[in-house]
Amino acid sequence: MQDTTLSRWFAPVMAFCLSFVMITTLAPTLGIQIERQFDFWLLWLGTMILLALPIGYLEIALAKRSKVTALQALSNLTREADASPKWRVVGWLAVVLVPFFAGSILFSAYDILVQQQFGVSNQIIFAGLAVIALGLSFIPRQFLIALTTLGVIASLVLANVFGTQLQAWHWTGIEFKEWGNATVLALVASGLGLGLYWQNSLATVRQQEAATSVVLPIWLAQLLAVVAFGFFSLQVEIPAFAWLFAALVSAALLIQLAKEQLVQRQLAPAIQWAIIVAAIAVWAAPQLSSIFNLLLIVWGLIVCLIYAIFAGWIMKISHLRKSMGFSNELFYNLWRIAVRLVLPLSIVIAIVAVIGQWI
Image (tube, rainbow, N blue to C red; front, side, top):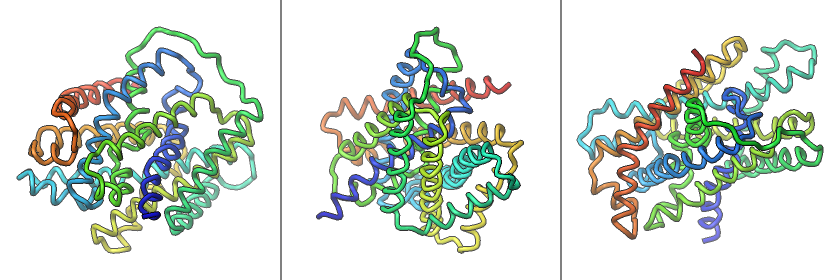
């Protein structure tokens, strides 16, 4: 009973920590770390309700339906839906994106160390960080989550202790690009669509009738992570090094999660490590980092889009209705409208907005 209660908290604690680290990683790319705008954050709150909450329910409902991790589940889910095996590609896109995201986090940590001018080759610094993260990935998951939590909390506390100066909060006009940024924060930077919460909630969903008891703690933890980010900055050296520690451990956690899915898919160990190492190693080319960050963002949005279309239009209605366990049919119908119409349309608009910023 104690182990079950403890595991129930893993997903929301991990949601807070990973969301905070992922947001801090992507924020400079999106240009939102210095834009403390009330209108943008209200727009983000809207995307959390309209987009992140429905896809959070989607992820946990698929976990309840399949009772296995995402990559392994797609084979069963497509067969149940009499759908083409081509839909299974979303599982592979998601599982490869996980170590690719770990590489992006390590690159952010690398950026902090490069500024210290240690007189060491930049490639050696990145390789060293990657090796450390790969080594840490063998630590039991509960310890990785605990260490990540320690690093995140330390960086937040130190940022306030050392008086990080941030731009004052202010109102501005809403621009088209802000919808894309808000959607990225709500979906990609929260790890939704990657199967991470699916993977870490399996023990809980097997015992819970309704998905809400699993989804809401994760969603609230993601909300809290973005609120915390609004009062954080990497401009001060000491909190930056605390965040570097959190980044290293969270990258190790992502590597471990990806490896677990590949193991359960029964891939040969050599292929597992080839996928993980290759997805991380490409970040060793600093001149391509901006392109890779754009790829990461669009890639994450596409994964969410495919999941929304698959769950909303391809799967049988009865399968997900039962997995949701909503007490009221109205809630299910609202969720279905969100997944079938609101999510796909919003994600497509976000992809256009994000790419538009880079053209």
